[in-house]
Structures are given as C-alpha cells and as structure tokens.
Image (tube, rainbow, N blue to C red):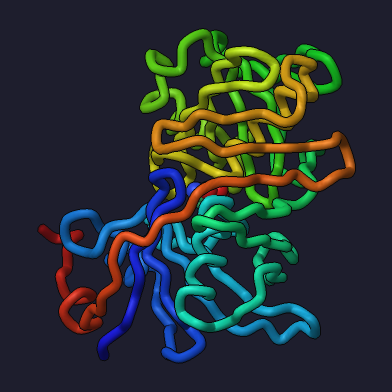
Length: 293
Ligand SMILES: N[C@@H](CCC[C@H](N)C(=O)O)C(=O)O
C-alpha cells in the first residue's frame, strides 16, 4: 500500500505528518518506529496522524507517536505543524481550530507566514498528574515550587511539571556544556518517573529570555520541544526567576511562551515549515528489518 505523507518541522523538531482521514492508517509501534528511522525510514522525531474527531464542535483529532513508536499525549511543535498541514491539504479553511488530543482539547490559531499560536493547556504540578513519585529524593522550596534532588545526581536538582506530558526541568549555568546526553537518559530511567519524562536543561539569560535544550522521552535530544519550552517557562515563573512573556531560544529556533499564572493556559507561538511531500510503500519500508542489521 502507498501512503502519502508530508515532512515538516517546527523550530527543527521534525515530523512525518499523515492524513488519516483519506487514508486508512493502522500501524503498529514497530511500524511507526520504522518510519521514524533516520537511515532505514523517512526520519522524524515524531509522527503526527490527522483524523476526524467524533466529539461535537471539535474539528480534528490528532495523534502523536514518538520516534520509538509509542503514542504520547502532547506535542507543542507538532500541534503547530498539524494546523499548517490541515490548511495546506485543504482539510479546513478555518484559522482557529479545535483539536482533540490525548491531553485534551487544544485551540490553535494560524497567523501569517506559517506562524501558529497554540493554547497548550493548563500546566499541572502535583505528583500524580505528572506522574511522579518523590520517594528517595530530597526537596527544597524555591519560590512557589519544589525542587527535587536525587542522591546520585546531586548536581542537577530539578522541578517537575505536566503539560499533558511529563517534564523535569534543570537549571544550568551554560546550556551548551550541560550533560544533556547523560543526565537526560539517567533521569528518564528513574523509578520516580513511572511513565518516563522529558528532561529540559534551561539557562536563564534574564527574566524574559532563556536558552533550552530538551532530551525527549522516546526521541532523544531534539532541536526544540514545544511542551518542554512551556514546562521550562512555567517552572521558571514559579521559581520567581522568569516573567511572562518569555522567549525560549532552542537550538532549532525561537518559541514565545506566555503564561498568566496557576490555573491559566500556556500560550505558545512559533514557526512551522514544510520540507517535502511524498509517498512510501508500506511493504518496502516495513520490511527493511532495520533492527536486525
Ligand atoms: N517534541 C514535542 C514533544 C513530543 C512528545 C514527547 N517526546 C513526550 O514523550 O512526551 C513537543 O514539541 O512538545
């Protein structure tokens, strides 16, 4: 079977986007993983599957699969690319779109030049919402939030937040020299995070500007992470170090994050880009058997 797709990115976080309205898509996690593979597949941090929503008043449903093939709750950069995709494909002419995701209903606004603002949902900080278990960790209160330290990683205390998906945020002096590739997977593997975690490394430049790198769950370090940018900014505001709006400089581009405080939605604005469109043959791609090579 031939499947049409579009390769897109949002600030360098790249996606294979598939219309699941006009194509019947029922892939297994291993098949999604094959699509994401950088050598044997198309290559992507995440895959986005666009479907119709069964909910009244909701325009679409979109599903997110990490590069490891697992389905996840939320993807900030992906939600911007999703809006651009449904417009470019003629699936809607609305500029304000409501979409169903595993993390709830999102409202998205398409602007000129492919920029998109997404109401990313209300951040949550309670352990069960993340989910997170603080057993064995020491705690320090910083501003209006709690910072946790694992005895094995005493130099990298972190705050936690849920943007629908789980995040830990570490403040670092210099994001370029931060131990992203070692601390990221180490924190992800802790039993304190039963569903693993996206690990952000944030350098505060001033109350309105930060630099950020994120080691994502199921994808490794990406060039930008939208939900990671939101989590970093809300924890920074809770710590008393940041003030809304905050410009987040990721390696792949800039995201603008605004948050009025607890109980309010986080607004994220950023770019989208089309890279190319094409089609793949499922028999060929799924029989590459890359795990055995
Ligand atoms: N890149 C995304 C986040 C994708 C999901 C994440 N890796 C997870 O497992 O929760 C973003 O832009 O938010």
